[in-house]
Image 1 (tube, rainbow over the protein chains, first blue to last red):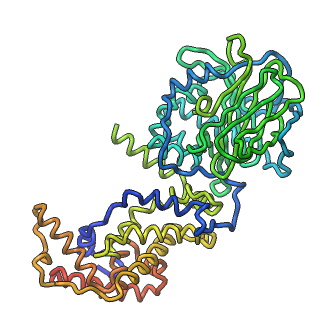
Image 2: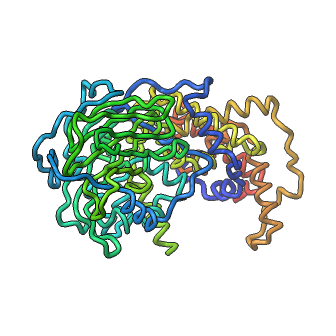
Image 3: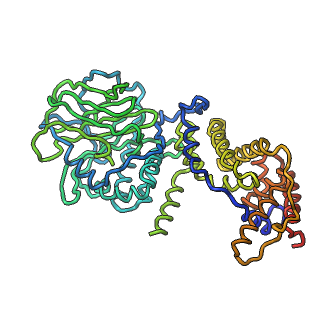
Length: 328
Length: 194
């Protein structure tokens, strides 16, 4: 044996040395010490990766509704408008027509430097959904971004167990024969909206789901972030006013929200201390539309898609939804 | 079901390269950073537990400092370097700092205690405990520079080159410390004739 080889006798001794387990609060303490609002701790600032939002681990994860119940709830709350103008969509990545320009009240302008259009984001979302539908949880997990991973680990206990449940919901997209994807670029990342006909638990419905996605330059891949949420902020709730001329979003946090109708460039709105953003539409919505609202701050990257008509039921004509019902 | 879960968990962990997580962490994503350190935590905890032999109450403090220091220093991390090796060095430095705080003078070690006896191979619980105590006390009794060389090479399986990278000293220096550390450890556990 040379000096560079492992000495088996010494290695045996070392293996006998007890290694203490983590203290009960070890990871919570570390999480707290890494928080940006800890005045004693400076954040690393050398580079920026497209304004990465972060999901923080929360010590008291919220109770999650079983997937089947959420699905039923989604079918119940998402509502429809009448008929009308249609806009931009893509069928699995192919571009179609651009959309209308919309007005807003509490808005600033759209971002001046949007990221380049990334068709790979839609491919990643579809691969994620197809893997879920096929029961390939490892494959699905490989497309999932680190923020969603962190949230699921914090709230559901493990990514795998949650994805196994999600097979029944998002996985239904794998069997959709008419699904289309629309890519909307906004601050903080890209949202891929998947629309089409789904058969879930024997019920056929037309639905839209919004999937945040982020590109990792180093890995050269897109990650899907359906659950990049902050449990403390609660759900992103979106509703359309009775007159269908106003869209409102609420969430228990401050940040930036944006609205896109039918894939049009997003309209920004700041969500302040009132935890609310409102967009006034230039004309009441009529006909079929897909409304996407996204909220971002330094913790959350959540998106909600409302498709209309979203059911065969008559009014209420106002849509409302949250990621917990439509995305998770 | 258990094996499937384990296989899935392993596959899941392998899907995210360190480099990608480092990039996210540098951008301020502390969750990406926590994911990253959890990937290396078992080995770093073993390193800290052995370097801080006799001071196990300090292991959590040392690792906390190591991880916070690593997060703070991430912008200076060279991406062509191995993150795990770099993290070892940060953890090593944190352990040394912790030792300096708590062990200004080496504590006397009673080598005549019956607990130094090498245990039989029969897994008698009492003897296993005794073996653990023996090993820990022996490790705690050798100088830190020799201890860390032994821990890195014989405990963690690093070669001399990697160990010298972690410790910031020449490979020859690591080899010398390793040789002396091994000899001393064997003598303390009564295996110098093996």
